[in-house]
Image (tube, rainbow, N blue to C red; front, top):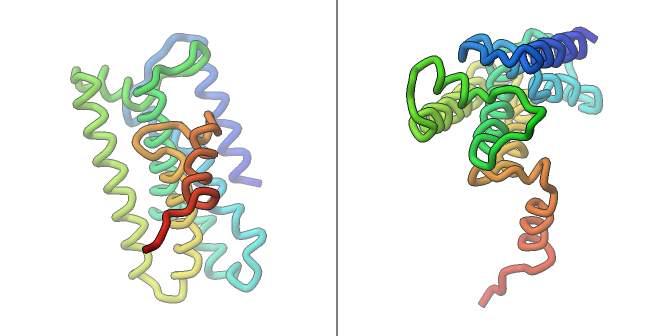
Length: 183
């Protein structure tokens, strides 16, 4: 329940920023938008159907909003924002993390997207590091890593195949409908 409350609060804060035409600082943006990406919440609620994987230790780890869970949220937010910045956001969208970074650091879009892309790499390092910290939690960390990998699938090359599902259909067709001939 706490995860849903945090998600709703972040949506409300983004709505306030949008209606005030406010571009938050990069850190303000991250504090809210990592939660609003929904990735952190999904990584936690995915334990509902995890069966034996959902041990008390694993649940406490996930609900503790660990660095790996937060990193999954960062990957979701940054990948979405990189795609939105590349293709232009909609009229009813608030500023992306790329725009917040540009404004705060007075840099170009190209420089900001490079920094954000590096932050995605750092988030992956955090998730991978969690795999080595406590061996008993590897299955739980793998669940979070799998969600992060699916996010990367939907946002390959800064394309938004999550919102524009024709892109994901083309990828799936290439993988399963039109298999690569093996000689």
